[in-house]
Length: 151
Image 1 (tube, helix red, strand yellow):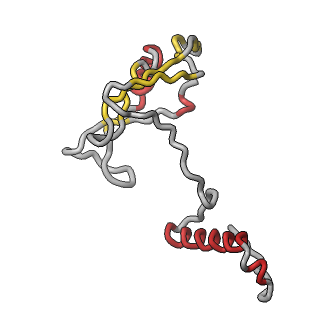
Image 2 (cartoon, rainbow, N blue to C red; image 1 turned 30 degrees about the horizontal axis):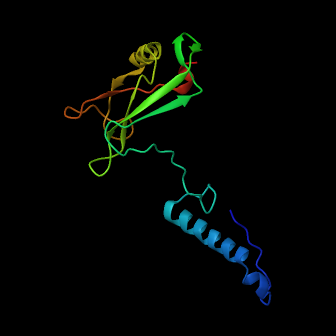
Image 3 (cartoon, rainbow, N blue to C red; image 1 turned 90 degrees about the vertical axis):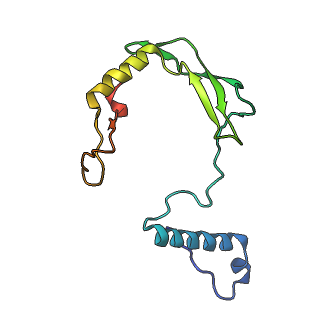
């Protein structure tokens, strides 16, 4: 919530200040947001512009190498070696969205581990709310791995 102590009616200096006008604008925004969405605004106002680290995609086949401080895991709990990922442009504007192919993002051990854990939680998907129902026409399977399920 934003609480504003209103200046005296004859305090023109405060009433005309940029700080006071900004506070009124923020309060108006927060009230409108709560009225429109039914929940209070919980972030900073005004929100800073997003920082989207996006690699350029100027032509098909363009490749970027990205170094990571995280290593591949090759055995249970043992991470070793440097990790350098190769991002290859496979689609870009104006023909389509910016899409990169990232080969060898996970080690074989990591892939096997995810598959092993996933087979324990995968179920037939349900359609609808409140538990849903099994559809005869819309069929799929899904499962969720919690971050805490694996070290």
